[in-house]
Amino acid sequence: MRHSLKSCCTLRVKRSRLGALIFSTITVLASGMAAHAGVARLMYVMGRDGVFPKSFFGYVHPKWRTPAMNIILVGAIALLAINFDLVMATALINFGALVAFTFVNLSVISQFWIREKRNKTLKDHFQYLFLPMCGALTVGALWVNLEESSMVLGLIWAAIGLIYLACVTKSFRNPVPQYEDVA
Image (cartoon, rainbow, N blue to C red; front, side, top):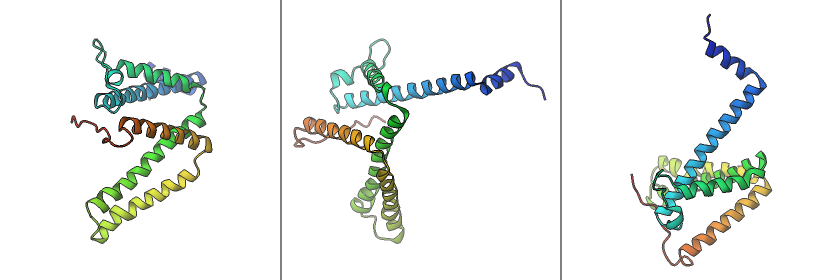
């Protein structure tokens, strides 16, 4: 079996510790850049639609057509997080993921089983009540095992979000800003 020079060099680099470090670094940087760009664009949409202040978050650089202010802000926040160890960073991500998964399960029950009244047949009960309840209970078991420090930091972050929402909605007297459906 013949191997090309390129595949032999790649194989040697992969097997060395330096190669592992290089590939790990490239992987982490690529993942970080994708997350950075995604968050910056999400913040742009929130600024464009009035969820965040439009003058800052809705700004698009005239030459590069990118949400430049958001990219800088996300980079600055990422620099602040440089002192987090992997356990803390993972725990914070877990808090956000658990919040999302909890609300996804509860939203299925709210939307389909309660609002749309899809609760007539056994299949409806299974799909729109039983399965989402199982999902919510499973996520609840994960909540119990979440690190205390990430729970505290996550709750502080959630409280800041609620305070901001109260300000934007004038103490919840105005409706919550909605995203514009562009698709």
